[in-house]
Length: 220
Length: 294
Image (cartoon, each protein chain N blue to C red):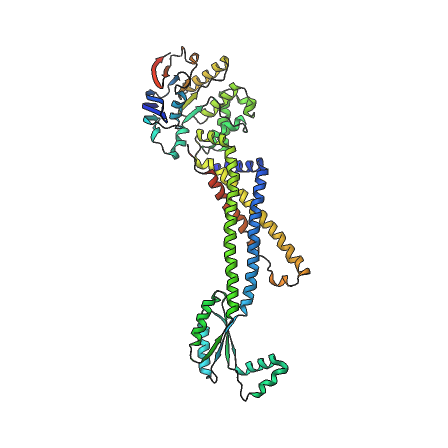
């Protein structure tokens, strides 16, 4: 589902990622870990085409990401749900409208949007806040809304960048459980985190990034 | 269609949400278009007056003395077939003398000194509006002068030249003013939409990451620019209508001659301003949104 082959990325003269190769299988849940500045976020950005590789090849589903034209990028992103550490929710829209936005860009009929959004909000247990504006939500609630928004269009891949970075241990556990549920339904999930507790004892594959390279791959 | 409706709703919401800056933009556009429309109205009225005057303009073709009826008819036939000629009036020499007598009034006795009628028969040719160009009329007069049986051709060269100069000045003025207003409106809309675009930068970034196409992102801004332009244009048309109605009803009380040179403007005169506003507003916002890169 996600395949990196000898991928390198530079910012001017600085190496951000060097000769990265790995494969995430369809329906897998995997983690990328490493210290701050190791290149975790850049690696995720390469997957949803916010950055382009300077060397190597990236294939996501059937898309050769490095060769995508500008006009095709939106169609790749519709297949890739993204959960951001800083949430990126629109403060002037309600929870419902924030999530619905992901379906409006698909030109979906309003009735269908209502059904799908209500269902996904129920799934992430935030339906009671559907008419609330994001600034009035806690960090954990906002993260659930972000997950709902990422999941509502049923993407094949879900990427999460430090999804528990701003959350307490209990809320982190709830969010992690949500990702496991999503994965159990068949979505490929890749989580970037520096929090070891998130993947310890999960039995999942973990890619350890250090000094801009994959230092090792473990099964935790 | 659903995307269009969503974009329209977003544009309308933004129009209301940013009402003060939008109101200022609409006012600026309407002032620009009002100046242009007022100028056009004045041009239209002057053109109307010129058209009326031009009806009286014509070529006078004097014929040789003693020209046969047959030859006169032949000339008449030629003039009738000429596509530039709108009307022909034949003035026999007797009528010419009578008219001269009437014109001289008490001094008409000076005509008694002539044994015979000294005036020739003539044709008065009125020309179509589009043929009233100095070089064209001059060429036509020369052609007619070469015809058999024609003694001389007269026309108001100076008057025609002034008429055309005035017409030309008005046309150049319209073009210059139109271009200036066009650029000004595009710039005003550009600035406004650019501000909105920057204010919604985060929203646009989120939309891009969710997989929104360029047209989905652009459309609300383009519609907003278009609506601002239409509103500005409609406002200018309304003000123009009010001003024109006021002038046409009140001005004759103070300047009676005004009614003679002013037209009642047909409704279609008020349509171009909102249309021009729509086009320029759309163009301004199109430039403001620019190329969207992912």
